[in-house]
Amino acid sequence: MVVTDQDVEACLLLLDVMARDDNSKNQKAAQSNEAVTRSSITKLVAFSLALVLLPIAIYFISLDGVYSGNSTYAAITAAVTANVVLISYVAMAIYEDDETVKHKADKKSQ
Image (cartoon, rainbow, N blue to C red):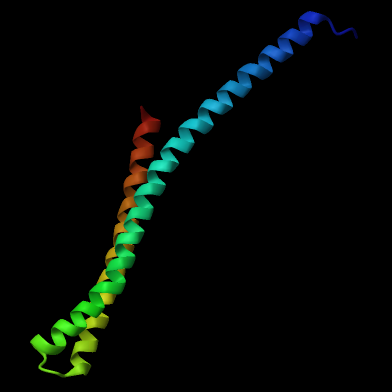
């Protein structure tokens, strides 16, 4: 079997087309992942700050203003606040994931 110059050129052309197609798919995936990553990191930082700052603030506010120096009730209020922030973050993440799945399904159906 003899390989001609036309065969070599056809193979090189095919490899070039395949490489371009892969690069365009990778670029599109990178752009969509970048947007999701920025959004996710922003939400993570916001909820992390809320998880640290809100319970401490609620503790001192409720200690002096609501419970008149009863630190047990103030601590319970702070713990409940931390749990509310944590549950809110988990619920938001689940909702965001469902929304992403629906958005991808809509794109595939078009």
